[in-house]
Amino acid sequence: MRTKIIIAAVALLAAMPAMADFKFITQGYEVALSDVRLPRNIGGTIAFKPCAECSFETRRVTADVRWEINGQALSLAEFRKRTAQLGDRETRPVTVTRHIESDRITKVSAIVRDGE
Image (cartoon, one colour):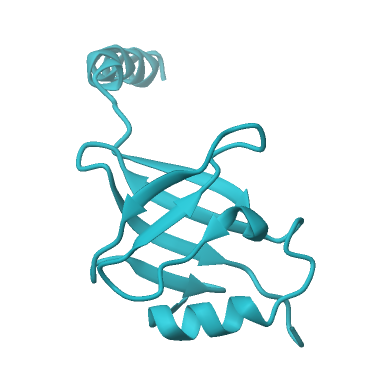
């Protein structure tokens, strides 16, 4: 038993330097739907407020952006159509995910309850 504890402690200590090198590659912003301006087409721009007091940030989108509702991938046109039908835009959360190194938007997602 004592040997297992020593092995576990050594393994944890060996992993510590690897944990120190950990860095984020994406950043997610949870914003109100009212604070997001969706692009009209691929190759356009998306604008969003990273926080309630912040100014709008604008980023170009590419065909690589994943548009999701309830985890289901949609086209940009279908995402725009579905979100346009939603009410209560001030409290409806949308997550905008940005790849930090390339400064590109990688995913925009929303949760829609059944019947909406």
